[in-house]
Image (cartoon, rainbow, N blue to C red):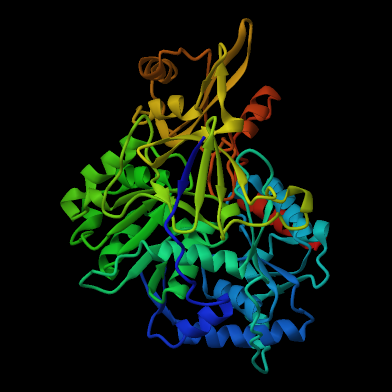
Length: 546
């Protein structure tokens, strides 16, 4: 057994998120929303606080009481800020859920949303006019007591202000785990949990820069890395934060780097696939005049990190001022609020069979025993909401379900226990095979899954690979050859798939176990086409069920 301990945790700046918001309102800092045309809409923290006070009054007026759960299905917007912080100021608990981002898989969205509404016992669902038209089916199945309300209408109805103080051990929010191997679980986090993690991350923010601390994020606000690591950290440690919707980044990745340059941002976070997408999709002419030299912390986490992607990103954008030492692989999970380990600042990535994710953040402990990773610390949840039987161990340790090893005092992640590919009695991390396809022409970057399937002589390797939509002759054999050269194992099955076929979590992570199940039950198929007629039918269906 190996035990790693972080430095002592510094005191939290505030006792509750309500107090953090009130303190941020006294600063000149705030948010900036950036649209697809790069138009800006500023929201100073003082205005955000005032709007939240009004929204809290309206929530109380319609029957929301302290301790109630309020679900939010909203895009990155001022509506989200009103709803999230207004719910907190009303003494209730926000439950951010993901909007219907994959329109070709709406049945799956309805099922998951209804389940999350039910297991969180949400009394109210908040949304905007555009998304609300697609929520009728989920709403009809879960039937929250106060139904669905539009954020804009509640805000306009406000006739007063409200701000309840709260306490450190009150429930601050429920965030659902990503659900890579099982259905998403409702992680119950207190104010103390969230603010402890923010205090730990705060120690990594550079204070010796010639320009003010600022950030840029396109990450979804229903996911811990975007909500806690970006938005709430900007509130707790008041700093300017520019927000883009994830759909804007996916359509034009260059807007992310352009925003970092224009805002002289010091910190921005993304999963591994985003760095690879930038290399593949951004053209030099889109970055004319861009200077990335201010980007001191380029955090990379939330999914397996491919060393080759980091190197290509550093090489590709060096001429725009990007410093490879800014690359900061990290590790965390919803059940620990967010951050567990960070790479030392300005050290860059370290590779030893895998990418190092660094050392525990202050206050956190990491235990690796027979390859199994467990964590303990003040930001680790006590339980899943409504599931006392799923509480952490009596001595505070949480089994993460992740596998890894320690070398020279640093943690390396090798995969998920439930995703292991076992061939001829030997365990393989699926990333061994998936990373071998990086750069293969015709393969969609970051869109391959390796699983074991039954064969005549035991388990055999199967590769489920999304193409980039362009027909490449001999692609199936190229996939086999690339994996064989890198791993010494020849795949028994290669299935070439249309883009969007592989099942993913709400945050975009690949669901390997579900992909294997769908393959073996002949259910692995691309999402349905989104047509005007199909969308009209879906809107009618939503209306009939609401």
